Length: 217
Image 1 (cartoon, helix red, strand yellow):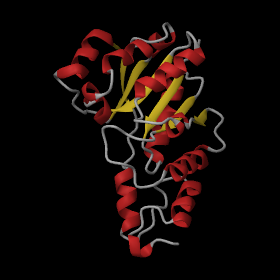
Image 2 (spheres, rainbow, N blue to C red; image 1 turned 180 degrees about the vertical axis):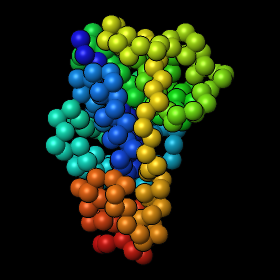
Image 3 (spheres, one colour; image 1 turned 30 degrees about the horizontal axis):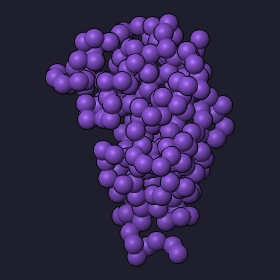
């Protein structure tokens, strides 16, 4: 059974780095689809600058035309903190024994020890860590423990079980970040070519990330 990709994040805003990572992992792992899951109330980060409706609209616009990408708004609809383990529990109930592949960047994986019910995550899904080539992996704590106990090198292994593996992938890394896009917009500059044009138009039309005096009413 082909794995189902789960790509959570703030997407504040979504950019080509997110999309390229999802595309490469879909090809590498043979994912049935990649679900982008915008966080509603992130428990480990400050609140997003763009509201939930805008971030959802940007993700939906950015992935339009790609039948292998979907947007899942369950964390935006769910009351309370956006705990990844709750999302995985819901998806496991919906998808039965289908393998789930939770996609995250190295920065998120390095902090996974502080996540709610963190040790249960690998029992619900495989963890796929997207890293920059040559990046140093955590040498201690829960990330190191997960790599030691559950690390695998063969992408095909993720199709053989519903959960339980940690795969590290060094893919193409584009020099783009949500914080850089926000800073560009706040400085009155244009984020063109850092993100899909449809998502860029939403930012400019709604005044997301603009300085207070520059925002459209």
